[in-house]
Image 1 (cartoon, rainbow, N blue to C red):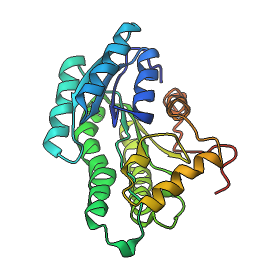
Image 2: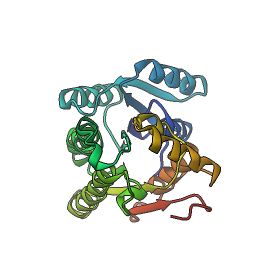
Image 3: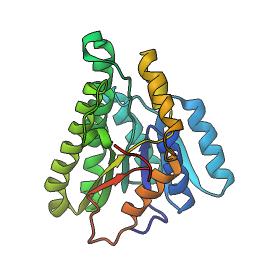
Image 4: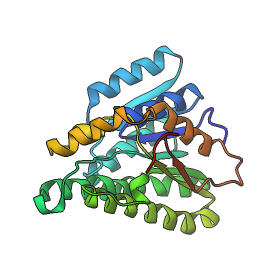
Length: 248
């Protein structure tokens, strides 16, 4: 896909992978809707994009709230006249053993990582179908392929994202000419660790930074653009991206 002039929605755009991808999409000529709850961060990114000659708008959106998602997508479509690319990237990763019964964290992960992605898919898919083409990219994880202690619920959500993404590809690829991609990063330097309330696991995850060279948000953004810029007849269905020195 040629990105110049395309219209893209990026959820979880206020930091990390989402922010990096939004910046690269805009630099490639796409018009970008930056969606997240932290509108102040989004406005700063919009200013950065416009200063560099790009085009973007900030959309205050909580992916858990279906009405918020629908309103945000409508704002984007009304502003730019359509939609071509959807990057479902919003997610949370609190870590704890199941026996600690942090049920509120479990439900929040399911709400954001699974239901939130489904909400944004439901709000955007009709616009892509109407266009007769498009590309949906969903952020899964190495945790969508493997299971780790302390990450039982997070892994369950990311396995769900991987399965949903593949099912969606099978349903809309040939029928509606919509490509669907699952991005599955390994260790990435993002704000995900900030969500960990269990001190032991947080210290453990922070300690990983001394064991390997984490990927950057830019590295994953480059991966997303690689999938988006593939020839029209090519659907890069999955991309598993790890630091060279990640042993698991």
